[in-house]
Image (cartoon, rainbow, N blue to C red; front, side, top):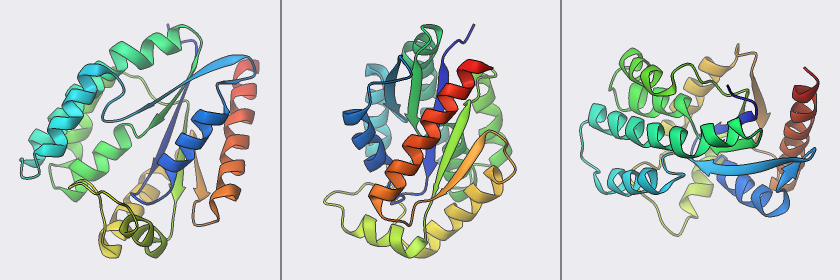
Amino acid sequence: MKKGVFIVIEGVDGSGKSSFLKRMMNEHTMINSQPIIYSREPGGCDTSEAVRELIMKLSNSDPLTEALLFCASRNEHLKKKILPALNENKIAICDRFVVSSWIYQGLIKNAGYEKVKKINEYVTDGLEPDLTILFDVDPEIAAKRISERSTMNHLDAYTKERINKIRNAYLERLKDNKKAKIINASLDLDTVYDQVVNIITLFVKNHELN
């Protein structure tokens, strides 16, 4: 039985979510006496990180193959890291989860939205984030941030048009989700950081009262 709090950070490439998580990981090890574990997808545990490396190498794989590899990574990640943490009443904060698969593999790479959603249902077995925070960013700002990266991979969306398509897909799927909050990630990084830490802190405190 899940006891902890599962929080997912979503957003287009260049939204600043990964930078936010790196800073939060350095500054916050617990909230309200609850320990925090940080993770990412694909990855998060040994097997999942190995699958991540494979995904990064296979730039020309069929979209459904890529979606299945993400599912394999996610299955190990949930079983080995996320679920054990939640069962120990910890806060699990993850960089990306199933919504990313729906959008990137299902829609952008045309593996089929419903197909990708269905195969992920087998893996997650009903597990949903208690809170999803979408870092919504102006495509021009995201494209500029991506262009300034020292390294890139084939999963990075680096054109403004592609980023805008992904952004709209995120907004469409999360705008009516009562467990989702959409924040303006075009603001300066310190403002975004303070805002999101406050959202997470208040959510965890209120979650304990319910």
